Length: 568
Ligand code: NFE
Ligand code: MG
Image (cartoon, rainbow, N blue to C red; front, top):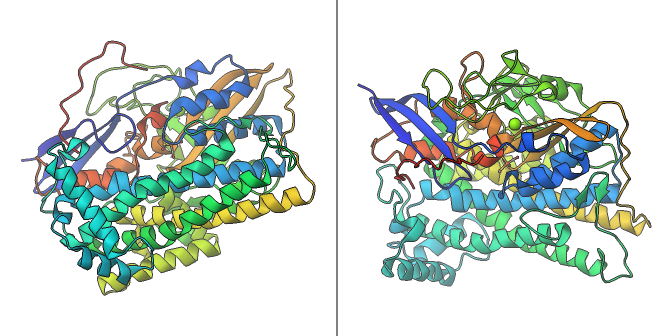
């Protein structure tokens, strides 16, 4: 007898996601991932000025805001073959990296960790024990006994207040929670510290982007940060040094606390390297362009089919035909209709809503189902780390080796690279990518300073729109993976605009051939100890860091009631 579990909405994510699973003999046998909102941003863009698209598309999301701004200007620049001054690339790169570091920290500590870390158990941990454990893992400066006692005191005061708020319905004491109390206290202390640290990363975004969320400094052709070392109202040496100080502040937490916490939690839940692989075709794109046209990048990207790193194929430039021609989206199981065809390339893409209610074998999601080279593909930090490692990117290999070695030491056994094709592997890869991006922040800052020192203060090339139709794609390796915007422009107006977003790739429903998407595939065979408390399902879903507003890019004007919230 199988049991159907409906989790709606999934919490500790962005947006409205419904996950259904069938469980038989304590294992997931079937899964459905359903996006429960539609906003129609692609439709809103039609007929508008392409220079405004970045400011509008950026409102797709309040979590990964900067990323749609970046992908949008890149799409229009690609259509116009418009070079972007180096200073503008470096400033964008700094914003991208700082945003992603912020996002990865928030995901691990504030969105995912509470699937693995039991806050109630942390209350019975000892400050001495937690501090000793933390010191055995890293030299992070926030590991003192006083820091651990401070966290325990804050948690105790909170629990004694009787108002648990967002923590009230956590799965505390669940049989799948395995960390000893001292480890829970250590992680809880870093959870609280991370609230401050993520803000440090976001200050970099705010200084360079003028505000966050939703930066203000982009423009098609560059950035609006005027550079003048003699003026107080532009990007000055003082502001650039403030950015550097923030980058320096971040390093200790990212390289020590976060990397070690992820290694230790991963090692103590080593059984979860056996669950959650799902779709193992991995797609990522290169990022951090180093030249005006995007032909050299600091961070590689590309396609790894069927978990085979030897078959890696790199994506070398913003103009790469392999990527441009490889992407399609299907709507057989999505609440849209196409005029003709099972799957459409984004330049021919259509966004025509057709809501049917949830049909198990028919349409059941507002998210489309993308394919790459005709196959489902997983995107995200794991895909990106695998691609960068396959491309021989030294910092990635170093941080990957470090994390696997440390996890092996905690587990008392060697952990092979193959272990990363899993739920825990996705979380580990995000920490590795965070460390890589922190190093890249330092490099991009130096590149910017050196370029300004040559006397180059250019930040903008003026776009000129032809009468005839042109089309362009802009891609970006966003925190959740490959983000691409596809624009068709005629007579200076947007004729078509399609966003194929990281969470579209991962959270999409079955495709035109009924093949499951990455969330769905990764849930198969996951254990479920208690159907009333499906913690294990949350672990795998959260490992992707879902963002559903991005993936669907309407408000429900009829305000239908949402199913009662159970899962934390
Ligand atoms: Ni709204 Fe997003 C990222 C984009 S979707 S979070 O990263 O694009 O996965
Ligand atoms: Mg779309």
